[in-house]
Amino acid sequence: MNNKVKIAVFASGSGSNFSALAEACKNGELNAEIVLLVTNKPDAYAIERAKKVGISALVVPPKSFESKDAYEQAILSALQESEVEWIVLAGYMRLIGPVLLSAYPSKIINIHPSLLPSFPGKDAIGQAIAHGVKVTGVTVHLVDAGMDTGPIIAQHAVDVVDGDVEKTTEAIHAVEHYLYKDALSELFSR
Ligand code: GAR
Picture 1: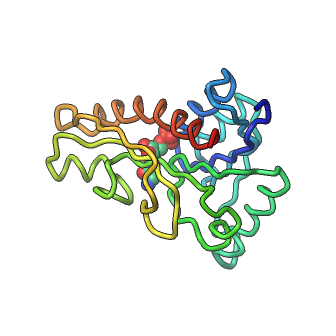
Picture 2: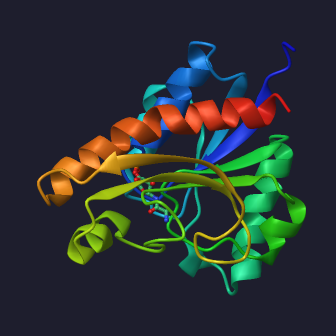
């Protein structure tokens, strides 16, 4: 039971979910260790967050590779070197391809800021507000080859706040930061 699950967190942006997960690992709420942050964006703020908590960051710009397979193969080598068991996507804005999907079958998880299957893809919160919905939410799901598809593991509804993207994003992030660790904790204990 003391064996911590080794995870890699993939992020393309701010990394608030990365930080929430790192904190949950540190305080024991999540029986896991983030062994690597992987990012496709050299300017992702998530890199600074990783540095602050002493987690290695692997920066892999896709344009440096001749194909998506070659890009994912480079990531896969690093994951295998660090003995990563699960891939946890946290604001990683790229589709996962066959190289990683076949190396980690049913072991890649994503969090998305809507009640899927509504509003997949980019800017889910903006999409929800443009659509005029009053309730949106957060989904944690297993990753397959589709865009924010794959079996749903956990969902939580969040009210749209004043039809405002910024306020609703804040409410969604607050839910994401506990829903993700709880869902992962449940998955890792299976
Ligand atoms: C989160 O809201 C996450 O759900 C979303 O990106 C944000 C990243 O925030 N992911 C997607 O939209 C995936 N399709 P963060 O960088 O502060 O963790």
